[in-house]
Length: 367
Ligand code: HEM
Image (cartoon, rainbow, N blue to C red; front, side, top):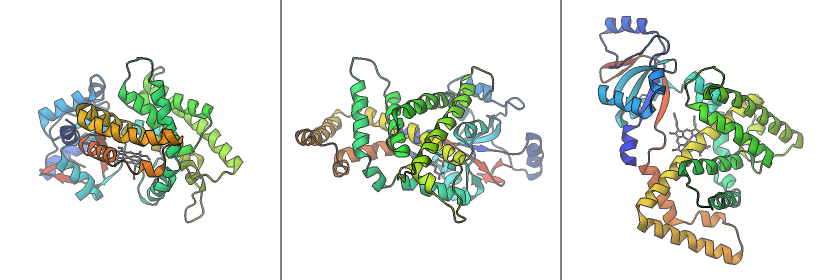
């Protein structure tokens, strides 16, 4: 099932920046056709249709009707959607120079416009290095005991015969690990405040973007403002204490560009929220698939359990937490993780904006 999903759900939403009239005029001049599909109503396009049903149904019914490439107009953007591995390779690999990363404004607004996903060039390279550095093996090595303790505490909370939603539980876990990687051991009240506001932002992220009071989107916008305030307080405290931590916040605070400029507080906040967004759902989705695959393969489940129980027994006898070398030496568990990542569909779509006219299989996709 994961394999099929990986093939079918590679949607690339590509934004067309010109107005429809201009596009149609150009189309009749060049003789190259836009893909089939509907642009819906003026201004709102097909956004209401998208939100009035399961988005998967919206996309798959269009895919059934028009094929692997079709045009639409969603979230304020005239768009072309591509849904095949071949088309994904075209946009992301072979013709990547014709596109730049762009997200719908509503999503950019919630994450923060200075997050690295929305940028190219020197700023992007700088931020990417900082994020990668904070996730280096050396940095993670120091987190093993805390990650292990977080996992144990979440497992303890499962006692009591409740029905659990695996994905939601995995989200709780990946959020806590994200907080550890970003801030190290953050005070409990900050963790709780971040968690409360972040959940509201997360809930509104894929909701219909409107400024009407009481809607999930508006609540998310307000919660995002609260997140900025909490992050300001944390940054301020860290600066006052002059701590030189190696976590992501420390890396962002200590970074200077070639002119000696440090990052602004807004740039730091947007990138922290960005990394939490990038890390939480992806990791939680991967872990959810792992649970499902293990459930479906009882023999492998028993073998993974045996590998884990052996380590646990040793550590219980010596009263030791999980060590870095043990985490690096779980051959079967490691293979299960790699195979699950290979099979599962984790990121089902992404966005790109064309920076020039693009032709794909004789059809013009973008102005
Ligand atoms: C199984 C887990 C993960 C998967 C499948 C995954 C997948 C991806 C993909 C496909 C992209 C590219 C999106 C695009 O170009 O439109 C991406 C970007 C990114 N991911 Fe992940 N990711 C995972 C976990 C994480 C984690 C744990 C972090 C934590 C830091 C992270 C941080 C990022 C960042 C910062 C970017 C933007 C990179 C850039 O713009 O250069 N991801 N991820």
